[in-house]
Image 1: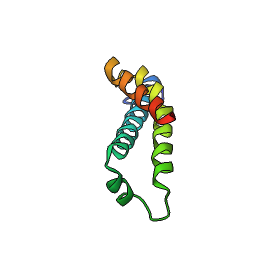
Image 2: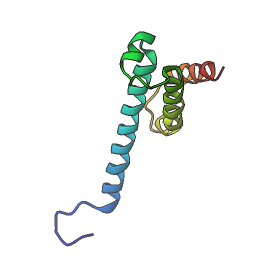
Image 3: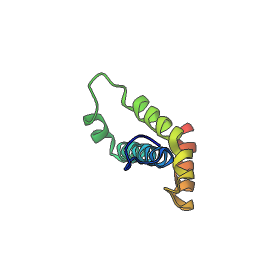
Length: 94
C-alpha cells in the first residue's frame, strides 16, 4: 500500500477503473444503438454534411459490436438482448 493510512488498495482501484471503463463502453454502445435506431432523416441531421450516412451508420454498428463481448461478460444484457443484437449485426452484414 501507499503512504497514507487511508489509501485505497491497488486491487480495489483496478476494479473501480475496470467498472468505470465498462460503464463508459456501455454508454458508447447505447448511444450507437440510439443513432442506428433513428429514422434516416434524423440520422442525416445528426451528422456533418460531408458524411456518407449509410457508411457511417454501418461503421458505427461495427465499432460498437467490437465492445459487445466485454459487455456480455460484464452481464449488461439478457440472453434475448444478446440474440437480438447479434441478429441485427448479421442483418447489417447482409
